[in-house]
Length: 412
Ligand code: PMP
Image (tube, rainbow, N blue to C red; front, top):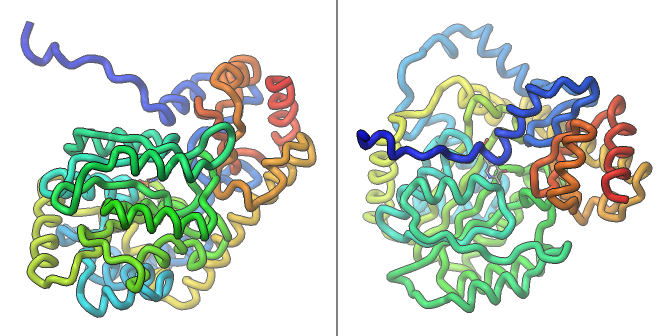
């Protein structure tokens, strides 16, 4: 047969495949608690008030919104300036140094996934084909790195026997350490609201982790998809970036990659708005080389990013009233997620639901076994991802009793 017949069937996407099954389910009380899309108490995916206001401004100002021509390869220049100062001055004052020294290469990306894809493509072409990913992690990490030239995906222990295991994590990194500055390995770090567990290292643990990563000369890839959803305060949640960019402690001789997304914290999911920032060592020539290769990578992948979402985000970031509203919107979202957990705690009495400092963000990691997850789906039409991750915002006043009763039944 012709070569095209060598294409084998790929397994369905671990998360989006479940939504396809959910859509075909006819159960009247079915609940989709799989995907990380924020819904309000009425089960609606709402537009944030700040974002809706920015959309109105765009609608009213024809000249802002009628230009449908291409953006530059690396995105809209105003978006770049505003996002850089949002990330590297406001969220992380330590970052100003790098901006002032012109050491940050920037690309407007197709949301967080696009940032990870461009990162992995660039690194695999020139720097490294080995990456450490937490076990467990967002399933798409492995997929993105594999698809973009990484040959070796290693997994470090993250969550084991129901808890974060930092010492095993660091032992894993150290035990397979063989390389040096000329043949470095990369490591993916979830900036906050680790997906799927919701459990993040405490600040003092991060210091130990970053010290080790720095000693081992690993290249940090900070995946910041949930800034603001941990504490409700957008700036506060950039703590890993602030710690990593403490120049008195860390140098990052092979650079540091920040993959950032506005999908969750602006509710811009489908508009694909995010960014990649590469903090480079102090060498103007190298910065220009990185800039030029990022452009080449993007040009070959999708040529240039979409415009509309970045215009919206740019307005929110650059208009003081909208920015204030945005902070309130994120605070409101985080508060509702905490409220859902306390409602569930009242019904189930599970400790991990009680203390908001234990698990952060959009998800609740139930600890259900795969067969309990199957039972929940088959007997109650309640859909969780197979690892037992439950998307909290799918829970609301009208289904919380049903969901908690079902959880009770499948766990006893
Ligand atoms: N990283 C992690 C850990 C995520 O959970 C997500 C969203 N599910 C992303 C990156 C990227 O999402 P997006 O491409 O929609 O910004």
